[in-house]
Length: 403
Image (cartoon, rainbow, N blue to C red; front, side, top):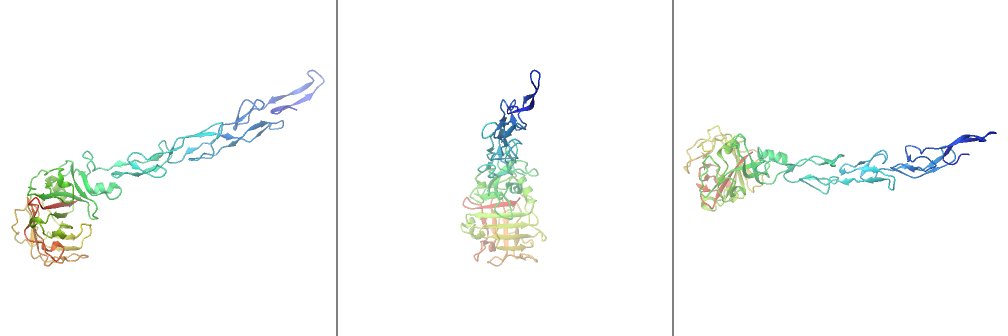
């Protein structure tokens, strides 16, 4: 019989060499082994575990070569068939002939630039001020997506509107300083304070009267100065008239805040400055224009007592074009409604302010916001008459416009 690992038949004969036939070495079986032949020795192919022993009977070997499964952090049928690193991992799996019969460089991918998290498989979220989605994937970097900086955070990347910032933030942006650029305004980037926390915003800070500074000029006043560092503080400034005029034509909605108690130092307007007053105009003139609404150009007052975004009191005013109160020369929409015209009244869903009557008078002047807004203290104590906000260094009035 042929030796182990050989195939063939030997038959005796009467003539030299007194046999016929041959025993030929059997090749190493494919595809799971390598080597020249069974007699010289075969080893399991890379990616297989086990051994091969030559035998004297067909198929002339015994094999325990078994394809090794894919290691952790990878997937596939076996190492031999090919393994791929899991989504969120980078690297590769290569078959070898020594234990554990593979090498693996599958490694968790770190969270990419401008995102935060332990790693990609655990989840990455874009940092504040960046927008996008990072998803684990099977590719060279282990993920898809990118976190892109939101426009509005630098002077070189101004946003086209406050609403654009909010829509792309991935949540509600914090109130604070942002950069804007209105192509239909000054077409120049400027920085100002934006309120995002109020549900009816965003609100862009446009003007702040303080220390008797003149707000009637076409150019910006104290551009980027301290006046933009808070919703209301004791510094004067304004954005350019071109940008105010762009904003005023969008929704007609304005938001007002005051500080310092006005010219008396203790006026209770807007809950003594703790609240905010929204005035929505059906028409607004261009900035620098002295204007009194016609009898068909109504406006609505809403008082938020705590500046929380919730309005407690509201009233619909129909103008009657009564003589102005004589505070000062107006540079924007101003009116006197005492009493309000026919058709005026409480707005559905809101209460009337505690103080009555609801008669009002105000003047937007160059150096102050003058008010006779008696009921809009929001309390039983009326706001005073001829109160100048921002005429001195100790009080101010801030005007925001919806954007």
